[in-house]
Image (cartoon, rainbow, N blue to C red):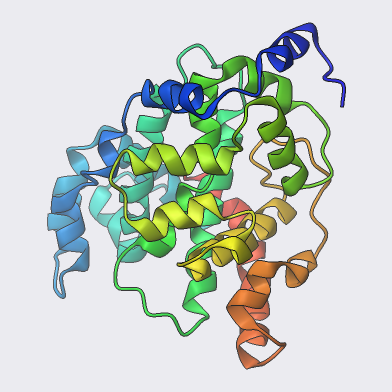
Length: 309
């Protein structure tokens, strides 16, 4: 396959790189402090059986970025309020604990990931954040429709972080990423193949290795590594499967992530994915419930994301 630009051709001649070179470049990327210290004080309040809105609002006020996202979301078209909300206590009331918890996870992670961009400001970062948060929301919804019991936020984080390898590539392999970003591909598997040909690793492996340096939970690393091919996952397959399905559904909604030049995802094409089969097997009650839930949230997702990014 001939790459379109001169810089792309120059990059192609330099790769694929050896494993040692790839790991050394990834090791040179800054770590994400947020992954080890997502606001524990706020988290403890959000998981407590009884918490006052005023207590939650007081902690949110200490974080200007989280405050801005909270007010932006509650005033978005998704909620359709007739008067503007400028009070954090009111925003907490309208949003509810679950959405505030998700905001409190996404905000510091995205802020940290933005620090990895350096001189790559022209890349479609906002599209990537929308896709990442949308995938996190959908992954949580999908796993809630299964019998798996999750007592933490793994179901949200696996979706939020599934494309972290793209962000790492912008720092560790900027020329290669730019060569790949506009290159037409048939599907996500084709994109991964092109990444391996040009760099040596695809974005899933790059992201999983990067997260491994942060001592992240193994189920999150497995989901990131196998989110394009969950059937190959030796363990934690259900998380990888949920991310694969969520990723396809979000892209069908037009929230593509901006980093892959692939055709639009057709409606219900996710029913043929390995991830869907891992999650639901044959078309039974669980699968029917999941299809109804996805159809419902698909209508609301674009407006939900307006206030988040």
